[in-house]
Image (cartoon, rainbow, N blue to C red; front, side, top):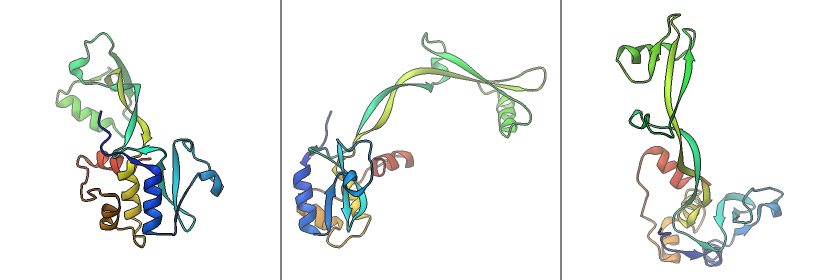
Length: 186
């Protein structure tokens, strides 16, 4: 697993303060706030206003997520596997999704059937799978992007790139939910 370029949190703090002396990093409790991960992260503040979170210790370039074993929908191609179960949902004609499901039945899609009383049964194959959990470390790219987006004096993309010798023109790609996760989730 690659964490990209690692930067020590003390170097990031010192560099940000050199670029803008009104920046300070503190635990949320010093500002009367509580953060569930304050032993792993600290807040980046500007004039006492919280800008974003930043990791403590060695900060990876990219986010690190936990892995959790969670019940999730799987494809019909996995329906015969031993660990897969089929969940059912009754959809009465008064349900807002009824027409949508009726159209799926007419299109012969897997997972839908009518009962004699007109209720639609939606079948969903589910199984426990390892999935992305919560963010464990936010990474310095996240922290820098959040700071840049606040348009604070001395803390633009070029100044941060020069101060920390990093390429701040590098940008994540992917579907909208992936970009949201890469840039905004803490």
